[in-house]
Image (tube, rainbow, N blue to C red; front, top):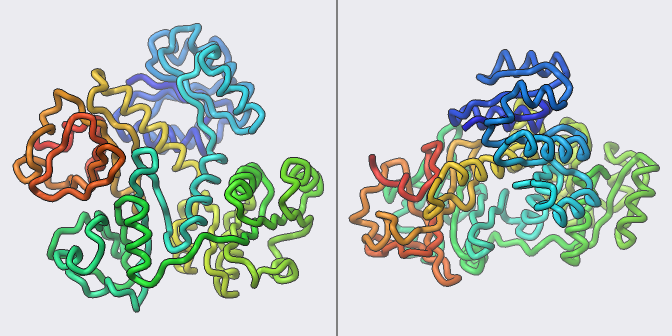
Length: 452
């Protein structure tokens, strides 16, 4: 596909990185020479060093482009860019819209504006954090099939009853409504078979209906109730979105921000939140504001280093859950070594959503296309949700007889609102949602799970 990306900041660069790796022809428009140099030296993309205007869009091939993604820091510029792109001939457009008031307006007028999709990395990051705070036992929670199935990641502690267990024995000891579908051990990632033996320190992904997932965690005696008191350090856009979501869930929020103007804005927007105007990077501030009484701390300042340090400090102070926003990949090992599970990275959350949309575009018939895509375990595995079409060769065949690829696991089938962990005798029916876990990149149809 021919794709134009406007803006080569963190979001635009990551989108270009994902799309070029999947074989798409990408042209990047960016005015900053340093960002242009970074793209030229690290990615296989065409670049145009220019402010975004009609001429730059024409040079980028808007007349024949399949998709335009406007990912600059300006909502207004992104929306206008998409409108101009559609006028010039672009078939699909995606705009990055960050501010809540802009987002609400754009969603109301999306058809009139000609937008195919909007992306909001800050809002999506807040959503991921709020899901984890609802399920503190997990490092990450990903909903599928409109919440009828969940993929939950957690780390095995030394005393976890799963340690030393061979997976073929798992169904006899735990809820059959749950499947262990992926494991990370050190630098290696596995789609485990029946002979795989779990060890302390493994990062494990399980899939199942939410009620079965909760029952599974209770059976291991590591279930923690949803956080009720949360301290948030950082009052930027992610903080605003997160606090609004948490308050809506009935969670008490205490937010610390040192910028007085931001504090005033938060107080006006979120009257039920406790807002403290202070330097949240100082441990003494956290202690004074009751850190020891919190169920969770969320560090989402503009500094990765401060976020990691605050998260580690909270864990050392006995806080059950600490979440840190970390943008730079190079700092992820530091966060992990300090006991922070799966730091939140907004740009990757957004990139996954765009990649999901692009793959759905590639599926011409739309009969068995990808509905949702998530990359897990450092991006080494993909979990895809497909909708099974009537004419799919995967329909009506027992899974034991289906010639699936060796690098694919059919992890769950969602039918009539129920999540089924399939066995060899189960079949995929037309209309089912099918969750597949794979190391293969580029799958866009359910049929891609079959051997070629």
